[in-house]
Image (cartoon, rainbow, N blue to C red; front, side, top):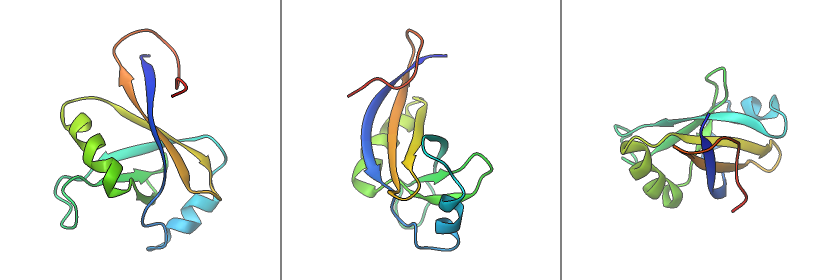
Length: 107
């Protein structure tokens, strides 16, 4: 396992759509999340969807952060994220570095 470098902490965008709040309510603190690039998204070509391990949609990385993170993902870097707390809707995003072992480093 490669080391993950913490890049940002941000509040999820789009959590009010569909059943995303319900999906969030079932999660616990520090849950690992799945980030999915959506380059064909009609609203934002830099879109990064945030899902739970079962594929339940939770929201999106906000556009300001996604603009930078999308470049990294498109260049082959592996993005990782975890949910701080479901109530806060705050996620921590990091990028896997090809060295060392471990988990998120403090930024």
